Image (cartoon, rainbow, N blue to C red; front, top):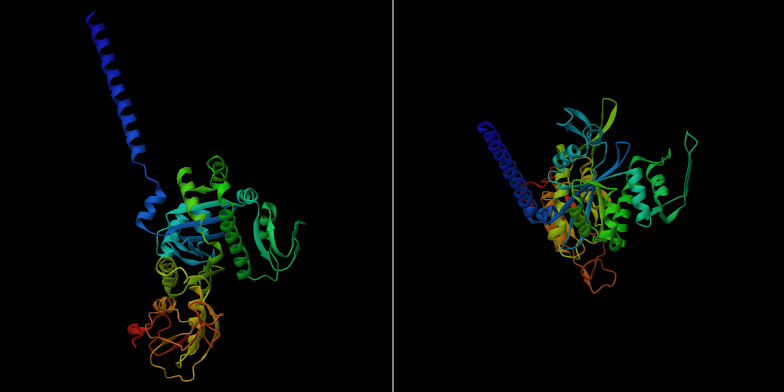
Length: 411
């Protein structure tokens, strides 16, 4: 009888311990949910701009990848295209290779981590879409509007025929697949990149246009199912509620620039200045969204670059540098003299903020304003008209080392 009593007491003790364990689990779960923060809001507390990696893939091969930088206050954004053949020694692979090989071999998380190393900034979120899911999203958004410069009528080796109309057209999901994947022998690599960049611009435009339907909580889960992300549905909804406000008409895509070299039979693009240039470009793009006034970042600014030294190719190389930062270079030429000591920026449009932003990129403070006529209806920025057909002229001096003006270019 005593042994039976001890057994009954042991059972009661065991049940009591189980009950305590269940209560602890329930309390811990409750606390965890109570303390859960919206990761998008938490990110904005640490950084005023939202950075998101957008990847479109087909059969584990990257079709395009962009870092989308968005500043909610001004609704302005920037797109940094991460070219698939960008080369470096990648720790995750233990070798020199294309950056998109990381995605194929290691997956999206490691790919995002290596892109963060490449651009020198954290990218908290990613949106990953397969080609088939992107096609369905396109149909759900009512099609994507793109510009096709000439009709496409291409027959593949497999007998498949690709057909696209020309002009500004709205393409459904099937046609968007064709637009993204067709190839023509005469088309250059940069033209293919531009074409695919047009699609991401059209996608951001479509989510802006269709945001009311997209963000309806009864609808959003159907969109969310077609997007892989490191955000849960609630946080993904919050992210889209922010980025759907983007002023897509002022989005300016920028790409990595560098030197091309053959490595193990592959042509790789190695970013200029051991990768520092792309870090500077991303930093400048982020800062410009936050720092400049609303009227400042409203178009691509046009430059003329003059070589005031005896260094061969200095103006041409500087043009490549500044194109990577989102400027348009109309011309490169020799200055009237080749013994210029100090690099100078001539501001033809009277916009001191943009002139300073340009100067900051090359560490030049020697900025002078052209005498310009007021009250022009054709002026670009501040009601002034310049006789020049460019916004800024850069005259390179001996103090310019190909990347920066030494000693801040003093006046």
